[in-house]
Length: 206
View 1: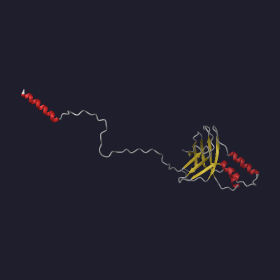
View 2: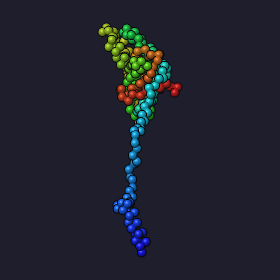
View 3: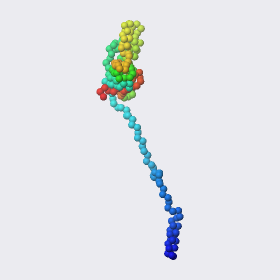
View 4: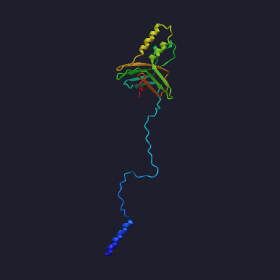
């Protein structure tokens, strides 16, 4: 009996020494573990942007695809147009350079008038070429007042021949005039529809 009392007393003593609160309740850790020291940073991936083209273009044959469905081939530069050259010399205008464009609009949705073409050099200079009809109008305005009626009639006929558009389902040849074509070009931009929807011209053999 005495031995059992001593055992019970020893058990009470052990419990008092360990504390009366009992074991701590089990806890579920739902957060991330704490990390000491500086945290690593993630570098964002840069967006992929096209690099400027370093291709040098040369005078020759080119092609373009209009946004409205037409296609075209161009000769840059092209041979002079004899009828225009004759009248240019008559009014003593400075020489010009010619470009030609053959437009196929059989699959296009709007009329193509080949409003203008811009050629850019690697140095950033722009060479602009406009419709031959506009140039012929300038020649007609430069005629002296006493010019023969026959000359004016020829200019009017030439203006009509180089005016107009390539309608949908149709085709047409165009002539543009401007400054001498540079030997090195970085880009050729075509404005097929009155300055809207510009598109690049690419070498015809690519």
